[in-house]
Image (cartoon, rainbow, N blue to C red; front, side):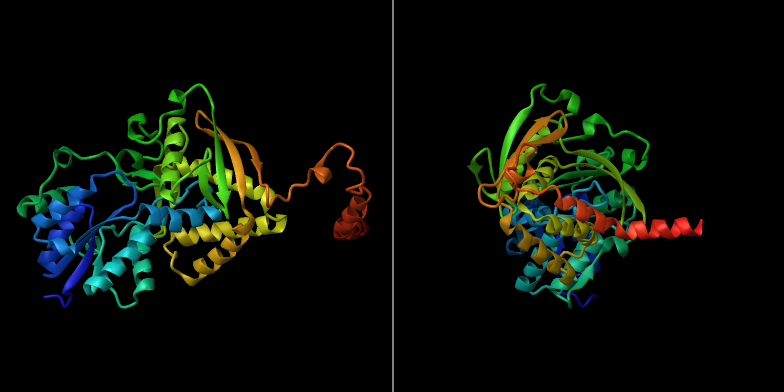
Length: 409
């Protein structure tokens, strides 16, 4: 019998986590607290409550919480201040949700007196790393239960058989093969992996996509959208201010309407394997170039370049589960310092899968000086003769090397 008396389970109410709930009760004989996070995935989250009650979970041990605003405000937006992209394409929609879930699980464990947290991530994936690194960072003595690393229910058939034996309701879609994809959704993105997509040469079926129309089916007329930023964060769309999660939801609707935000990539997982996935991130795909556009006129050149140098490392920290690490916090402090002057508006044109920046301005923090940058008469604002000495000084080392090479030949 285990010495774990109580465990907090990340619970969706689906087949896998319902099996895990019963397995925890049987294997660890512990009291289970279920935690279901609403991150904007759009599922009927309340369905988790009756399912948990069916397995004897007391009402006070069922946590279903709306974390959408905290998710966007404290995790998505800070990440976009850094213009974060992993391996050149991935906007980290799954990765950025995990530290928030880990944080809330630990808070619930502390509140309820639980010694352990449990999750349904497999031993092949990145999520096990993200959940557990976050949990250990926030509570070093926490116990981790990862059923996929312990049990022998390693196939869909075994999971279904276990469910049948223990009276766990199995929806017809699971009996008939279920979704052809493994999916994860939140306000930033929806991901698709597995089955048909395990062949990297196979094109994703059009019927797979849920948030976006195909570019071919998008409207024939472009749509112009004004985005307002304050200290690097989106604060209004077309002059309308609203909470962070509502802003991202609106961007998702705009992007999905115009076929924006689909990617198909093979990424390098933390555990060492390559994995093919398809992602829909319509709002993030609009936000990224818009944020870079307002930075282009408000950030000093070398500060902007320093941010670009740091971004791949920052992206890897998030992808690999180090959100709560001291190095991520340190980089975030620097990034946030740079964003104090990132204030103004950006106009984008949305058209058939494309996001085109067509204007930007900052009334308070623009470093763009048209009297210097002009191709017309600048009235002496810039002395062209200064460039000659600058170029010669920068060429000096190459001229010395070329003279040496000439003498040797």
